[in-house]
Image 1 (tube, rainbow, N blue to C red):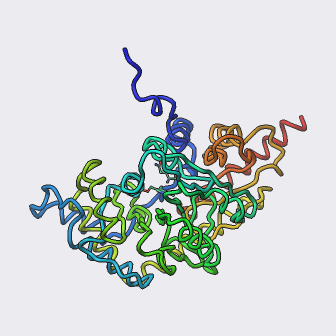
Image 2 (cartoon, rainbow, N blue to C red):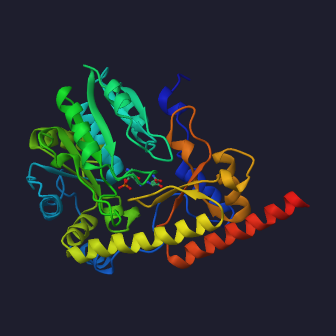
Length: 393
Ligand code: PMP
Ligand code: GLN
């Protein structure tokens, strides 16, 4: 038989699925794949349940239900002062994952160049490649994850069509500063390029940091597509409702990409997310505060065990340097070992890089109940003690 799609034949199963399967197989606490261990707000879940029962279960409109598009536009205004047209400036998708693909489809032609920043989320590169575009990778390096300005500027060329920016960033927990965003905006203007902004962690930002959408910077509104995710904002990752906001001229193309991908997403979930986005500021503040407490529990526990944890200002994740633990092996071996032997799963940070990568960092998710985080630390502590015994025996 003729070979099927060459790119997909070369693409492995995502690291999140691999580590979750291993965690399940070994009864490990899953601090690998990023998902909360409790459901989001009861009123939002209730709204979805009620919405299932009132006879509006046929196809939603292509760009999303009007009540959700209105809620997305209002949230853009409330949180960032962004003026988004609820009719022509919003497209609702099946998760941010679809939104990312739809935005890339909307903007890219074969031969275009796309600037991507490593460590990068796993769907970016395969989609860029599948669309016939060329990725120009720029690398952030731990422990600072500083933006390498010269390298970033050098990655742009007359063929650059867009930059894909993830802030707050997975897995680093970096929240790009106004100064960094200004530098990026200048490059986009100078090269007449677009930005696709993956802002799924926009509301998961901790004290001392502030999320600034690139779209709010001068001249960026017309060239930026901004992506949000109800999964993250309402701790309901299985719902897979995402939304893209942008200028109508670009959004009409995002809508056409979406019509070929899924056409429309579940109407009851869309209605419930509209309820969620209309919640008071107190909800959004409490979401971040609660997550910050969990970050701090995991951070101090990992430090007590000898990990060097890196600062994280947003997202679900802590990156931890395990080289102080005396483990003999790389990050993939380390994450597999703690999953199978300690009963705690994590994600090797090298999975977010292409080619040679830092290999002594693991990503731990802290979007879990405090008791579960404590239990994970206790398990790692027992494993570590048994390691020491084995080594000295
Ligand atoms: N972008 C980033 C950076 C993510 O971490 C995730 C998810 N976990 C997504 C996109 C996908 O979001 P969704 O689940 O809404 O598809
Ligand atoms: N975004 C999640 C993470 O980084 C995983 C989502 C997925 O498994 N596709 O852990």
